[in-house]
Length: 219
Image 1: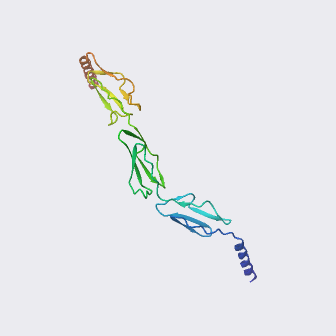
Image 2: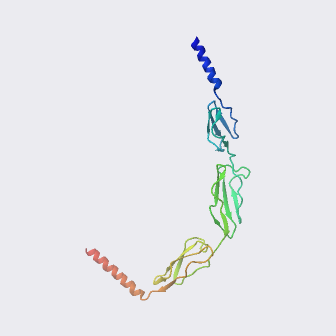
């Protein structure tokens, strides 16, 4: 009987000296599940937990860490680029996570950067593009040859051209030129020069090829 009394007295003393943590307030767009030792934070979709860890522990009457919060679940409107515009694939009054912003530039302007951004975790991914004045180079030509362009927009800045001469002609000069950001072609315009005795050279090349082929067959 004495032992039982001593046990209850000791238990009461421990409980009297134990330091419990105070109840935690609930959070907006989520909830807090807690007991005497642990608190677990949850956020409802599409809201995301921010500002702290999802779990906190009671130590010496104090909750560890800082109180997290649930994100608002949407992004703010982006400023339109100068000389351009933005189109959203959602309601402008409620731009939720997953929404996409599409950028475009006015006529006569070129886009530098990505043409879209996505709302993710209440923030827009990447950065907005810049609309720059479209720069073009003057047309180039070559006599007795052809010009191949690296882009469909054949005269815009950044385009590279490759020169190729017709049969019986050889290229004199660089075979490549590029339109720079100032609208100027790099290097000088090459020329297609007629190859002298091109028929004779062609005949010699064919003859040599036939001789080599005959030698290979005889081995």
